[in-house]
Image (cartoon, rainbow, N blue to C red; front, side, top):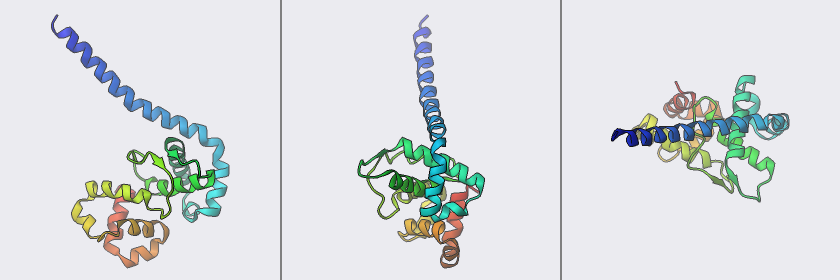
Length: 176
């Protein structure tokens, strides 16, 4: 008899934790479904304004657009940003996530601007330190964001300029 309240409390706690986990996944699935009508317009904008998009395979483009959708609808935006600016900011944030299972930058809730494009890389740096270790991170000499940018936008130059850092970034971003 004494254990019944504990069992009920335990069951409620487990139920609450499962609800929290699956409600986020359900919400993200709905974001993806809701945005499918926008994808043709987004593809056109991204082809014109975001050079890495055209280098992706069809499957990667689909995954990319799903991740863009989640960022686009999940984050709060400054009202001064138009739809194209929001899309490009989301694209810069989604590019590093294509081959990674992710939590979509949980520490970034409000986005007012992404002037240098490094908003997302600064957040990924913390995860890089956890997965690869701080010693590997120190090899970037406070240039992690620039190295990430070069990895995605000037792939061949990054590979030749810093081969060891490139190898570490490749391992991190491809989840190998």
